[in-house]
Image (cartoon, rainbow, N blue to C red; front, side, top):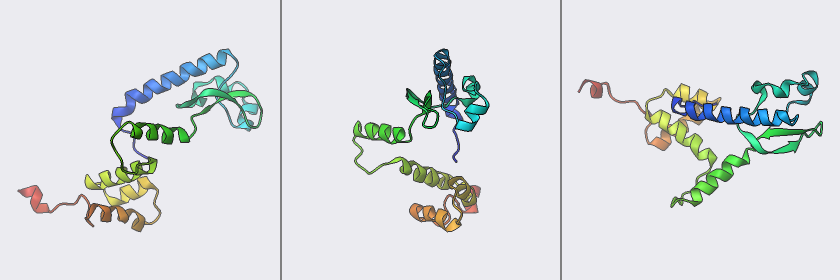
Length: 154
């Protein structure tokens, strides 16, 4: 779970429009997004409803693993990793960066901005607060984002 910046709303809306247009074109061919087998059987026309379309659909059609019908699945999780690796190769960044790096950056930025550690714990899905407290050590502060009340006065 994460927070979606309101700055991304336009981009997400645009991506949803692209996905729905793709679904409309697929539907003309009798194809739609892959659905769980029981759902597709119970509601044979559900694939025509925009609510069932993936926001990030695959570029290619595939065969549904259970029904064998032609359908469109979502992008594979490796797509993000591959795109990140391509982007990194085009830069002069030589530090090891992977998708998990963004999780650490997210947590660190929240703590640096003064977000309560319990909120960060919840957003990261940590069951134990000690796991989240590791990020305060990374910052070099045990009271990440907290400043002296004197600073607010001066």
